[in-house]
Amino acid sequence: MGHLASGCSGLAQEEYRRRHDRMGLRVYWELCRKYGVKCADVWYKEVPDEVRVSEDGQVEIWWDRGVETTQKMEHNRPDVTVLNRAAQEWTFVDFSVPWDKNVVLKEDEKVAKYAPLAKEIRKMHRVSTKVVPLVVGCLGVVSSRFVGYLKVLGIPDVLGGMQTCAVIGTTLILQKVLSV
Image (cartoon, rainbow, N blue to C red; front, side):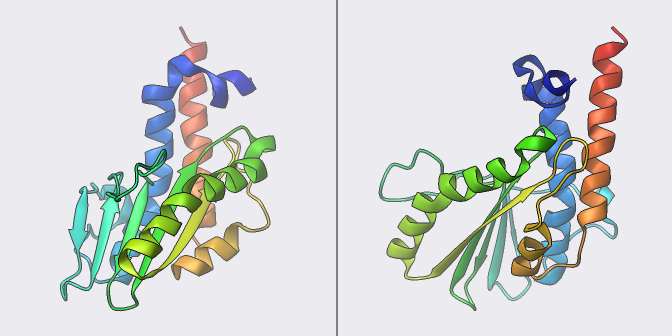
């Protein structure tokens, strides 16, 4: 069960990615709303663009876009990047939908994975940086730190919606695989 829900390399490219992106879409939409970036009326109709800019030009929100640095970075493509020029801050948000028992491990992994990028951006642009891992287990488990990460982003508590997306995504994956 665990292998099919979150560990099969054959499903990773398409099925897991669809679940991952759907779950993260809500956060992307909430960030767009927070910063006055044009977005759909409801989150589930949102179609992310690689780069969106707020009306005042002070905030850019990137979806699945590489971050250019002077040093070669092993990991430079977080799921969402928020460049807030007014606050002189970059925020890197990365999502994951692992097997439930791996949620805390995956959160720590995400922070460690993007720490070098955050350090390099601080050095290059003289800004503050944050790395925010948003990890929801494939059956809906989250760590005790999850709500705190949403507070760091300054968006509403969308935990239930993200859990629902993860569980429905897992259900669709299992239905597809087991009905073959």
